[in-house]
Image 1: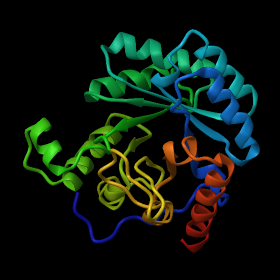
Image 2 (image 1 turned 90 degrees about the vertical axis):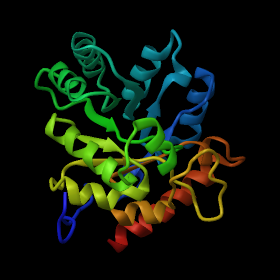
Image 3 (image 1 turned 180 degrees about the vertical axis):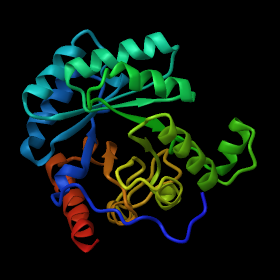
Length: 249
């Protein structure tokens, strides 16, 4: 995992909105729909997770996709191979762009097989939740590794198993880029907070500018937009910061 320099990363798109994923971490389906309508064309990617695990979820995913939105299904799935293959096949048929998985190398391989040769969903492996610090990680995973080494090792396993990328806090982006030399390997980054903003339960955070500058492909932002009094303005401020960072790198 050692190396003299991380491979150069060139963004896939120069428009900041193509790098922002808004987390629909709200309890009601109608609230999520209202937020999507409110943000309009400013936002094109949405993360859908267990908060919206209701009978109307499939219809809502289809509605988002019909509206030309990209869907990131964040269930952090882990199960036996047959279940993972079926899940991956089902969401591929829906047109979901990203899914998250946890667990072993075999979990990732099964999810990859479930795509049956299709490009989507992109499989993202969770490395270490952003509400964990080094003490949490060492206790729960019984390791003496640093967070950077731990996350980089998990990223390597994910890449070898056929994952398209990982979920990682902004703090480990450089370590991942050094460990996985494929410039197309995706890093999707939660734990993003603007300067001076409360970090809530997040322990490993950075600003949108810092995360983009470090080489993140996508930023996942939930509460700073969802909980804002003016949600449109909150999204625009984050996009402006991201755009400046994209143009600078």
